[in-house]
Amino acid sequence: MGICKIFIVILLFLFSLTTRLKADSEKIDLGLEIFNNKAMCGVCHVLKAAGSTGNIGPDLDSLKPSEEQVRDVVVEGFGVMPAFGEEGLLTSEEIDAVSYYVAYSSGK
Amino acid sequence: MKKILKKKRFNKEIDTSKRNFLTGSVTLAGVAAATSVLPVSIARANHEDSDPKGLPDFIKWKNRDALIVHSNKGIEAHRSAIGESIVTPIRNIYIRNNMPTMTDEQIGDRSKWKLSVEGVNQPKTFTLAQLKKLGQTTIATVLQCSGNGRGFYEHKPKGSQWKTGAAACILWTGVPVATIVSACGGIAKGANYMTCTGVDAPKDLDPKKATVERSVPLKAYKEAILAWEMNGVSLPNAHGGPLRAIPPGYFGINNVKHLGKLAFTETESDVKYMKTSYRISPLGKKGPEYPTCWEMPVKSWIVRPTDETGVVKSGKVQIAGVAMGGTKKVRSIKVSIDGGQNWKKAKFVGPYLGKYAWRQFIFEANLGPGSYNLASKASTGGNAQPELRYENRRGYAHNGWKDHSVNVEVV
Image 1 (tube, each protein chain N blue to C red):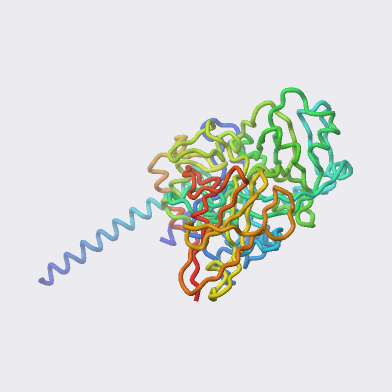
Image 2: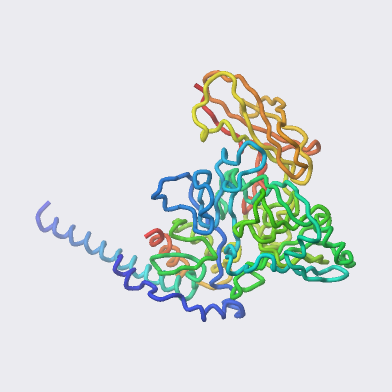
């Protein structure tokens, strides 16, 4: 492999990495926005990364749920927690973002 | 990424003025309301000082070594930590809260705690001090979360993944509901249910979604009590103090904490915790048409030996466990050491504390070196534990003996 080809491969790799980081960062931005404002998850949950101290639902830093677990409960609700998905309170994109954000940031 | 998080961090306390809209708006009603317990990964004990799942502040007095912390709202006892003297040590008793535990400040002077009684011929409001003058008794009951055993379901239902430890046998002291009924001139005509209401829901949540109000069939009132003491101590706030409804034989959710109202009603409560939550529905289905978690079924499990209790040496082994009948007396208990192929009768030991308590059982076996599956199967006479769980959406009321069996290695 010539030096040019190696250079191109590295460039492509860096480009894809940057793109992915940008996508992640946008998703996290949206997730945090949903968490703190639209869904107001922080009223009921502790999540240090978001600065929230709610004491009605479980402490998310302690629970450290997976993205799938968050999505499941956000869609269907549980106990007093609304079914954000089934009741149309959040879009699927918003649910994806907040699920990703909570799974990513809990315990940090 | 951390920079982004820091930049976007919520730098101020959540604006509580925004919470007002949670109670009224159609689209946003309860938007910020809470989950009780999210699904969790496999329960595992971690009792090191650095344990990120240490006990939450409101139950720092509990015995951390006895407990598995699923979340700060869901904490169960290890299989071997319910004790072998029938009554469960209070520091080892599980915690399951739908609403935040009320604080001393919120409760105020306990003797002035108020209970209103409705659906009777002479509705009244009593203070706790007045209730204590009215009458007193003590009963032993099994307190068990509806989802105890949920951790055995393969479809991993939402909620704490309890195995056996969301259960305890407790001595409750309080006033019989029947005594209160007499003091109020009897139950008003047309009542079909005893409906108990907790006052622990935060005021700014939608009361229809957040109020823990449970109706049980009217017949339950005859043996129910309202308790202010638990295992010899004043009922702790974390367990619903200063006053808790105890309808014996009914799942924990019906044992309403922080009790503020006792009513006899024609219909079941229409709050979410009654109408749609705690319904035992098939997989993929839900709704108020399915049975609610009321009477507990017959159930048993082995507490020793297990993989928690260390190496089992060959020779004579005492297999110990507990057996309960729900609302019926548990009459027999059998143990298998070969995964349910053969069963032999075990013996109940210790005092009989009434049909609502569980009974300790012992089975003596001679075990040579090898692998064993130890199982127990209780019966009320008419009903014996089934082999398998009843698959249901939320993983309620599991009493199948197979999942509750334990594997041990004998050396």
